[in-house]
Picture (cartoon, rainbow, N blue to C red):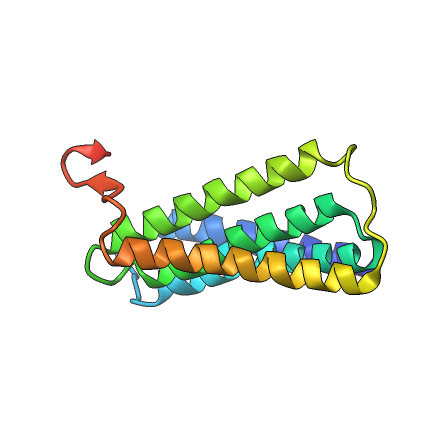
Length: 169
């Protein structure tokens, strides 16, 4: 019940803020240089990282392969969301950021789909040491692939995602 009151107060504060900003009709634009990276870190990375951590803990206790793929997919999405925001201010920033995030989202969706498909097929993994090794291997593999996407994108091996004036490639 205590959390319901806190949630109600947060929603009331948000509605008050929205109405106040609408009534005041502020014309000033506030765009600090680190706003997008910080927002990406909070909203596009923190939530998937939390889901990845939860899936890893559950995988270690239960040993189900789909949980491993679920956690890996969330780790991929969180890593892409975290890194993409920090590239937005660099040269070619929007292209680099969009390519990193969209590629990570694609890989994440493939892993999540594989998790769903194998949910009814995959048996539980028995030895705990095998679970730890599988978890570390899969999570490190995901981070290496996301790092490869970042490297290829920043070095120009991946074509630009959006050509200004022409649209997506």
